[in-house]
Structures are given as C-alpha cells and as structure tokens.
Amino acid sequence: MRAGLDIGGTKTDAVAIDGAGTVRARVRLATGWGSDAVVRTVVDAVSALAAELGLPVAAFASVGIGIPGRIEPGSTRVRHAVNLGIDELDLAAAVGPELGLPVAVQNDVKAAALGAAALVGATGTLAYLNVGTGVAAGIVVDGRLWAGASGTAGEVGHLSIDADGPLCTCGQHGCVEAFSGGGAVARRWDRPGELPIRDVFDAADAGDAFAIELRDGIGYGVSAAIRALVLTVDAGTVVLGGGITMLGDRLMAVVGAELERSADASPFIRSLRLDQRVRVLPAGSPVAAIGAALVGADRDTEEVLAHG
Amino acid sequence: MRAGLDIGGTKTDAVAIDGAGTVRARVRLATGWGSDAVVRTVVDAVSALAAELGLPVAAFASVGIGIPGRIEPGSTRVRHAVNLGIDELDLAAAVGPELGLPVAVQNDVKAAALGAAALVGATGTLAYLNVGTGVAAGIVVDGRLWAGASGTAGEVGHLSIDADGPLCTCGQHGCVEAFSGGGAVARRWDRPGELPIRDVFDAADAGDAFAIELRDGIGYGVSAAIRALVLTVDAGTVVLGGGITMLGDRLMAVVGAELERSADASPFIRSLRLDQRVRVLPAGSPVAAIGAALVGADRDTEEVLAHG
Image 1 (tube, rainbow over the protein chains, first blue to last red):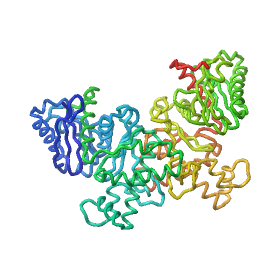
Image 2 (image 1 turned 90 degrees about the horizontal axis):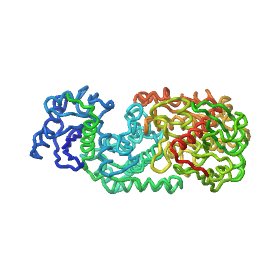
Image 3 (image 1 turned 120 degrees about the vertical axis):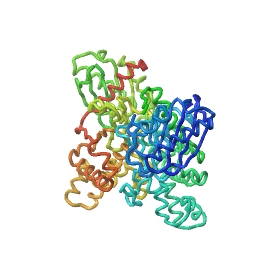
Image 4 (image 1 turned 30 degrees about the vertical axis):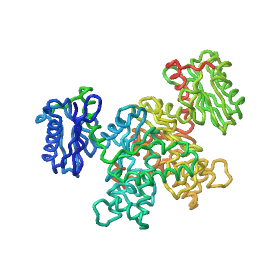
C-alpha cells in the first residue's frame, strides 16, 4: 500500500493505492499555512489514511507528495511555495522521522500527469493539461515523466498566442494562462462571487458581451495549448484536468468549438484529429494524489530513497 | 563508410561518412523531377560519392535518404512530394536493386535534426528548427528522434501565434511559418529578385517600412518557435538551420532582439536563458545529408533493412 498526497493551497487530497494502482482509501483535509502546519497536514493525512484502512502507518511502503512549485529532479526540497507560506522546506527531512517512511516529492502538475497516464492507461506520449488558477502541462512518455533540460517541460501556460492579448502575470502578453487561467479570468472579470469562472459562463449564457469574450478566450487558450502539445511532442492523448473541469460539458463545448474552428480553417490541423485526442477528467478526480503515490512507488523501486 | 543524401527540390546534397561520423566525401547534384529522375539522382549521387572516394559502390554499408514529406516510421515510401514531382514511390525498392545496398528513408528535417545533434554533440534534448521555404523542427533525445503518436512531432511551423496574423498556406492565420517561412515571406514581399529574404533584409536596412515589418516578423516567428520548443520539450539546445541561415548574423540580430524583448518583459522567460540555448548552423552545412547517413546506419544496426 502506498500513500499519495496532493497538497493544494486550501485543501490536501490524499489516497492510498494498492499494488494494482487501485484507490483503497481517500481523505481530504484543510491545508495548514506555513512550513510547520504543512508538515502537520502531511502527517495527519497519512495517519488518517491508515486509520481509514484499519492499518498502522508503517503499513505504507512509501509516501509521495505533489506540491505546487518547481522541485529539482530527485529532490524533496520545496522552495518559494508562496500559496502555502513556505519559503524553503525539505519535506522528506521534515516528515520522514515522524512517519518512518520513505518520502518522495514532485511538482503537483507533474504528479497529476503520472496519475492521469495511469488512469487513462495510455501508452506512448500523453500530455496532462492542468487548467486551474494557472495553466501548465506534464508530459508522460511510456509511463515516465518527461524531464527536459531544466525543469520547464510542459510550461505551455506561458506560450504567447497573441502579442496584443491580455497581460500575463509572467510579464508577457497573450499567454495561454492569461486567456484560460482561473486567476487571470477572475481578475479580468473582477466581480464578486465565489466561483468567478462559473459566473463568467453563466453570464455568457445570459448574453453578457464581456463574459462571452472571456469565455471564448478560455476556449481559445485551451485549444491553443492542445495544438501546441500535439505540434511539438505529438501527444496521442491530451488529458484536461484542474479546477476548470468543474464546468464539465460547458468547458468542452467552448474548447471543442475552437478546435473545430481551427480544423475548418486548416486541413492540416484537421488531419491531427485533435478532438479525438482530448479527454476530460471527471471533476474532483484525485489524479495528482494518485500520481504522487506513483512517484513514491517509483522512488522506492529505484532505491533513491529519502529517509529523512 | 555510409552514404547520406539530402534530396531537395532543386539540389541533392550527398555525403560519405566514416565510422567516426567524419565526412569523407561530398557531392552536389541537380535533383531530377519526377519519380524516375529522382531514382536516377540517388543512384548518380551514390556513384559519384564512391568515385570521389576511389571505392566501389559496394563499399558503402548503407544509404540513408532525407526527403521532404511525411515518411511513416520504418517505411521507405515517399508520398505526395509535390516539389519533386512524386506522387508515391518506394525509394528503397526503386534504388535498392541497382545499388545492391540497404536503403533507409526519413523526412529531411528529421534527418537534419539527427545530423545537427551529431554535429553539436548535444546530449539530452535537442531541437533542430529548420527555417527554409517552410518551418518545421525535429526533436532529438539522447541521439534518437522523438517519435510522437502520429508523425507530427516538431511541426511548430503551424503554431498560430497571432489569430489576426498573415494567412498561412495551411489555412490558419498567424502561423510561425506565415511569419518566418521563406515561401510566405517571398509571397508577401512579392517583388522580383533571386533571394527575396535577403532583399527584405536589405530593404529593411535601407528603411523600407514594409520590409522592416516582414523582417521583424521573421524574428518574431523564429523566437516564438524557440520559446515553444523550450516551453514544451524543454530543449536544452535549439539549433537553427535551413536556407535562412544564409543571413548569418543578420538573422540572429532580429531573432536575438525578439528573445531579448520577451526576456525583458518576463522574468520567467529570462530564467529560461533562451539566448544561451540557441546555436546557428553555418550556411550550407550538410546536416540533413549527415543525418540521413546516420538514419541509414541506424537501420543497419537495427537490422530492419530494406534490400529493395
């Protein structure tokens, strides 16, 4: 049995998977703020998983943690995770002694890419496109994460697709993320409401011109990211995940319309059969936690353990 | 000794490389038009290489051919090579009997990517960005071509970077190729002259406003392709090749200016150190022929020979 945790800015999603990759337990906790509280969240989540299974914590072979931010390959050190109040923290060193288990750490989107590949069962090249507050992808080739030269593989959120487009927090104009990221859309929409993206879709349905522009921009950005992933790594499968999947079919309606528009314009783009490559994860699917558990398992198998 | 041929629309470039990958002979011939004439060009080129070395044709262990168009992985069949007057042709079957040698065929840009990786000696992920009549890239990982799901890996020429940009022959607007491809630029420039791209740069230097727009567009497209290759596969090295390299430093001045502009706008883009990843091949470098020879060698080693 292996534990996998997806530590988000507000919630931590944790799963226990067995040797066949089946989820045997799942718990969700509020994420604490700051290094000490995040460490406590990890320990509490693993303990809660064990309790749900009726097993001791020592029954887990490994703990894998997906967390926002850039993690050096093979490292367990988290840096500048501003949303979590962490400046720098070696998570394995911090939780290892208390748990007594090997701990692996991976960027949350990359972990989710591994989880998505396992869920979809895709061989070959799969891209996982996460559309949440930000936009980023993870690329998986034959079950392994694509590392790249410097850890920036899959950063399609910062491809500029319109030099005159909206300003991105990265400083460029017209990035995919500036069109489709939940944070960017909420800032541009700038009206009160708990779920700005859903409000935008609702207002667009009601005929609000600015909401229609924002909604269509979301579809434009996501479809451009899909095209970019196919025209570079030739991903056979592109899995859409992240917060935006709460929109379900409403999301795919605008993305599908944009894909269709580009296929109508270009026989070459049509030949890529982009619509047939795209799959949308069910909202709330614990891919990042599942992928994190696989990262832990992988570390364990490779015997590059971090025992804290 | 291995022969490698780069069959272009007007010229065929052929090299003989030894076991260490060193070019031992090089010949250039006019490419014949139509299947029979292309077959004759291949046979003539291999014979001329052998003559230059003072060896019989049978001294070659293999013949590798780079040719425009999509080649199915492992296939030696060329389809719809309109610039060569070929509708469909199994090149190995056609030239094999006369040469008595194993023949491998690969798309010319992909062959050039292998040749560029061998020349540069890069490990890890290298992207070869060919800017000629069209724009396309080949991606090489640890000396092997990135296959992808459907043979469209590296087709960054058809990434749209401006929905209101110039119409591309593919049907989309604002493709990288529509900004930077020699064919597209020549059509937009639309003035008599033997080397339209050079004319554009000359006229831009002389202050012609439209020429400046076209020249800066070339830099914009090439720099966008470089960013796309780094933000997806995280290529550690991006090698620029193709006809446009005849511009030498004048090309890198406009590409460098665009890379600098994006780095000035975005600390994230600056952190990628794009300028340090880019290398420009010397004009006339026979990378595609060298890469084709390596394709032939690879086939030979793998014993997936096509004896015609």
